Image (cartoon, rainbow, N blue to C red; front, top):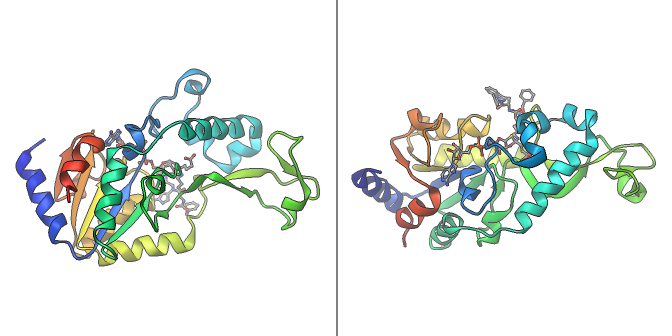
Length: 244
Ligand code: BJW
């Protein structure tokens, strides 16, 4: 990585009055959480995650998709935040009200690292909701079925994450878009930049005048939008970039 690009990016970050940090699966990679588009191992290597993360897949293969999420929950329970999560949490704690942290991740590792007010665009792996439930599902929950279901209406319990074709949580998306429009620096970490509307946030920030910094171990779809591209693992780069 070019040391002068990193030094320039650091100057922008230090001078920022308001900063948007957008993270994706790459920020958790060094904790041991596979990125969304990495090949999974074992049984799951046969499935494309993009094909499993839809309501249609859940309706067609509820047990399989539920087990995929249970496997991922177990995996995330066994890992810890890495230096990238910690650097972000410490940077934001030292700058109250100047940083908005928006994540596409559902693993909760930013919060575990100490980040507060994290905007979760795609939900959270450790919460469930009812798929088109009757409103009384929790009182009629049966764990005999796999996945759990409502004995009153037959609805299935589902992970409270956002699948393809589903709307993002309205308030979270509004707050993220507002942060993009008011930021003077947008730091993008570990996302392929392929999934919208999250991938549109750096462009929105740039259009409103922000400098965009991309940290990614590989080229990403957002490199063309960036004013600085730091091609490096987040766990190595962020502790330097965000050193207090
Ligand atoms: C490292 C690293 C290290 C590795 N250090 N870096 C506009 C244009 C085109 C399509 C659309 C559009 N608007 C909407 C769409 C449709 C769709 C979409 O975007 N499709 C595209 C695939 C084309 N979007 C939606 O459906 C969204 N809903 C929506 O827009 O509603 C309105 C609507 C309704 C109906 C029709 C149309 C519109 C919902 C999107 C929901 C995304 N959900 C998922 C699953 C969440 C649950 C779960 O986890 O199971 O969210 S998909 C998956 O992708 C997950 C992620 O959050 C998301 C983004 O992935 P991310 O984080 O970028 O990970 P990767 O794996 O792609 O990349 C990792 C990166 O890290 C790589 O670049 C590595 O190099 C890097 N890396 N190690 C630094 N150590």
